[in-house]
Amino acid sequence: MKRIYLDYNATTPVLPEVLEAMLPFYRENFGNPSSVHWAGRAVAGAVERAREQVARLINASPAEIVFVSCGSEGDDFAIKGTADALREQGNHIITTAVEHPAVLETCKFLEKRGFEVTYLPVDSDGMLDIAVLGKAITPKTILISAMWGNNETGALFPIEEIGAVARKHRIRFHTDAVQAVGKVPVDVQKAQVDLLVLSGHKIGAPKGVGAIYIRKGTRMTPLLHGGHQERNRRAGTHNVAGIVGLGLACEIAGRDLTAKMEKVRYLRDKLERGIFAAVPEIKLNGHPEKRLPNTLNVSFAYIEGESLLLNLDMKGIAASSGSACTSGSLEPSHVMGAMCVEVTLAHSSTRLSLGPETTEEEIDYVLEVLPPIVQRLREMSPLYNCRTPMSCEECSIVKRV
Ligand SMILES: Cc1ncc(COP(=O)(O)O)c(C=O)c1O
Image (cartoon, rainbow, N blue to C red; front, side, top):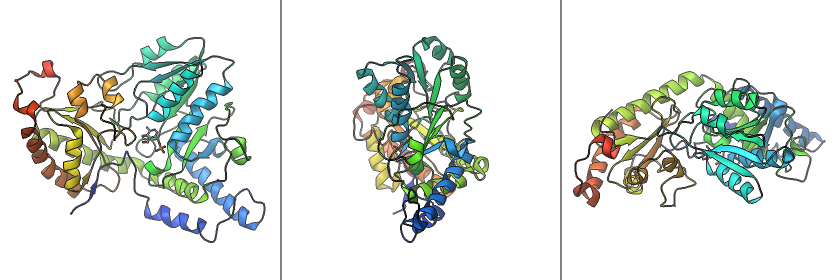
């Protein structure tokens, strides 16, 4: 059976050259980078090289990069580390209703510790209204946390505008750029970001490594206490092989980023056009243009997203019905809820996310296989068989683009 991977927003395959670069650090270069002897020195150099590679991709200085274990740890650190360090200044945090659970759950935790959190709404395209952000700011606001690109819909927030608002009000700005890095240009100077999080396994590095950019001079309370690693910002012996992999993956991501993503965008658009041409009564979730070039999220009226996923899986196609963290739950995703997607459509939302390795043949195969699956599932659906004709306005289903 063919195996077609269209779930790059969940995770990506480790790039062969990344794996090659990592292997010596499991074998002969096994030292601890904190050791002063030869074994440690050889490895410390590799960690610092990786720091430079990560910094270059996002236009930061190497000293502003702290290695962490994953995107979730980075987001947790950004938010809790700020909340603790700036507690005397205020207890108000602004975030958005569509953030990844790594941000939302951390904010909920802080609410139980006496912080106030404003969850900004989004419109039906998943976009943030910058005027709404301005109105939410109070003298007690210490942090704005807004993601760069949404993991479910790919919607791209107006990061530079948010950064400008945060800077004007002298409020710290954190962005979860886990989905954006490697897919769109990310520049911490242009965006006026103070804290930015990225994750290795979304860009061809292994799972278990990530990084947080902390703008020079930003006061943070560490999340992990212990050793003096990472200039006292993050205790714990380095995941050297992972860090080396992350560094190289960042370097590779930055090479010909525009050309690579144009190819991905072309294939994503072909997939989108093909699905909309072949399947009636479907809805695009997310902004049609302001979107990560690899992400397509579609709701298929009358069917459950989970049934579609299982049927696609039987044909060798890996897709997702939302973020991997929320799959397993039958609740419709909080992102669809925040976009006011009608509940049955929210249940049928399906995410197809492409990567640099995706081929045109794979897209053609999906276009051949998906429409008959949808038709078959609809024929088995009581909702479909009992449907009454509805106009687009009444049911908010887009028939065709
Ligand atoms: C937007 C976003 N933020 C954070 C994370 C968490 O990253 P990690 O899996 O490295 O913990 C993810 C993972 O899906 C994500 O998509």
